[in-house]
Image 1: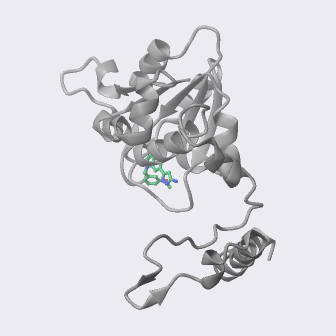
Image 2: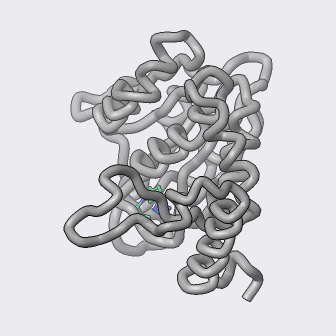
Length: 228
Ligand code: JFE
């Protein structure tokens, strides 16, 4: 999979050189590149923003540098999905990550200021599939952090990226419930014991206890996941 990001802060994406993602890149499972939007300006000040038509607070990203960046990065064959990270998009879910993990080429368009001139979205849609996606219901200062989170969620689903294939299988069987609590050694730590069932060797009892913990946790903190 190829992933490009267009941003005025390419250094944010240095985080992807670390750990999991860095290994996937070394193994040539993903090819990631961050592009500086200012490289597609032509004026001395590398201007990417301007005031909004109709008035209002703050600045918007002007369309011309975005047009040039997309022309340079998008493939001729249209086999690409451009993701505009936006608080006004569909919410990113695990199901979204599974869909996007099947793509050959993803381009993240990361806005700043109050966002990007809407015509850039329309133009991108003439050259590629386009999705507006929100990381969640809160406002970030720009699209970079959302794009990094989405990239991590997508790339770890690509076969070969996570060494232990079992951890992905277990996740996919999680029935939309929260995870059960987990414990490791020592069996007693600062006066707190590991739940006895986990050291019993009774695998049926362990599975039942874990399921019950998942249901209790989900009821308590995420009743919406149970349709309540
Ligand atoms: C941009 C901004 C003022 C947005 C109401 C580009 N999940 C998520 N939260 N925030 C974003 C994504 C996001 C994505 C791209 C962005 C925020 N901003 C900041 C400023 C109003 C805004 O929308 C600019």
